[in-house]
Image (cartoon, rainbow, N blue to C red; front, side):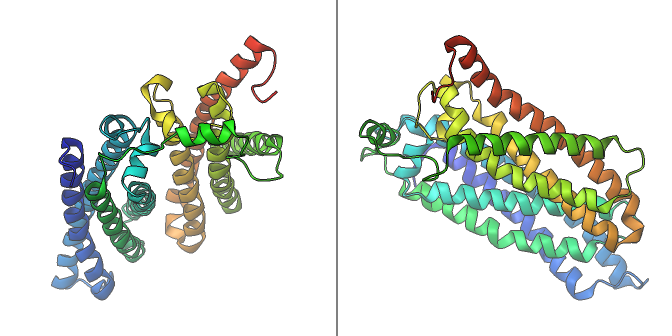
Length: 345
């Protein structure tokens, strides 16, 4: 293992987080086997107390995992390139780790999506004395455990295989392909304008629809909540594609440099951090709005709590979508004003 303090810190935080989540998962498994809300016996009371403790443990594990993932992201993008020959950004670091860091990040995103969903369910569950979502929350928490194990294993394997002796191509490969006329970004046959218009239309719909949902005094429309979630989930990949393949050109000042890792560099003012944070918020809040809309019809006692949660998600969606559009759109508008044309001609 590369004995770098940052990687050691990530490994320690991962282990602490895993222990906390496993502790909560043990209780979740017992809940699936023995949970009986209609019973007043000692076993049920003891299990309810353990459920309270496991909720705290799960929150602690989620916080530790998010912190470890944040440190790893900063390390890959800004710290480790200094010790990997030829690396200019996180692309070179991932190459030096045989792609394991990239896969670890994918697993980490999946883990955080599952655990944030569990957290949302737990908060809804606590809004009612009968705790109707206890079993569902336990199942969701157990889904996250194998994903977290895979994320941690890939992170450790990436740290062990990190090659700091052999040079990597990193972004020079992108520039070499660009100079030889090879198309390295976009979908073959799909004009750039289609992606731009798809992003504009989806952003407009999401902001407008989210504003209308948030403005309703007494929200009662389950279909609107589901549509809001569907729009958000559809918007997220389109926004990422538009950012990496279109709007990043105005940030880099050069065409055909489709590297998401360069957005996290200091020379670009770490602009990737708020941008991908916005995408994550939209995806998570939109996904949970969809879940809350489904729960609203299944559990009548949670109707009010789910309605409040959907409207809160709508407000967050509108705010983060507007922020994303401003951060990505402003460099493009300034380029147009300064040069009189778009960067692609």
